[in-house]
Image (cartoon, rainbow, N blue to C red):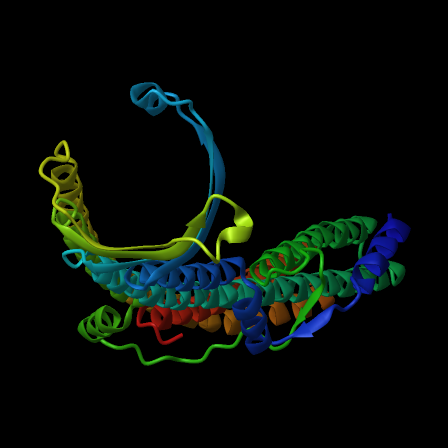
Length: 424
């Protein structure tokens, strides 16, 4: 049993190889550059830039060149005139141009709508960055917490091993029985399990953080720093709520969506309105290709006015859909305001609870350390049993674990509060 325990201890204390040292700021930098949600938001912004170019083309001249070569045969006129029919060849080359003159505002509203969507896409990048930054903070704190669990578990193993050494000396000196030694060995073996679990939590936290950073999940990370309690003077609920409602990009994104929807309503409303287009073409035509520069010039100029009288109620249907979309967006905005208000309240409550838990766990640690010292002294003097020492060690381990969790929760609560106000 002793040899097995020592072997396990040697394996555990050897630990994994140190990975890349990573600070929180560096993790944020990597995530903001590589996270997939941010990349997708950037690509959407690029797509909308192309859409602006596309819709702008509607108000610019459309120029083209056409070349036609063909042949024809028609007996109808020949029979009518009493002559023989002949095959007719024709060749034509011409330039054509069209220019939209008036479309009841459809073209320019489409351009404005595309520009608004471009602005909304830029805001969506800011939204993605806010969420990614919060995810990085939480992932980094989880990794720090997992490493703290490893340290606490290792400390517990070392305490159990020191107790085993003391029990063995007492037994060798003939002042205790073998049962105390066996129990101490069992306690050392049992203490290995939490450390194994803690090391597995490190791997899980590393994989989760690597996923946020868009890196290979098996990459080893050595976080720089420790969980540290830094008090934040919280704002009042009213202050936080007003700041969140004023700063949150999600609300600005919805405002742009509303503007875009209103532009679409104007576009759809103009579907059954008149449009005016200028048309022009110039070229040459001949029966033979080599005579195109000798024969008749061909040109045409026109203004085309189109007035729809009945479109099967298509325009009415589009207008009704646009009105519904606007109302839905207005409802979503009011809903989002409520959610942000609730988020502000929860952020303050979480910060307060985390602070109270941290203060309580910190106060407990001092008492737990004193209890362990007293139990160890009593055991050394033959006034306490192994069980008494084990209970005291467990109390200290629990206090240290609770404090680490509380610090992590407090740091995450601070990050969430700052993110709520869009100040992270």
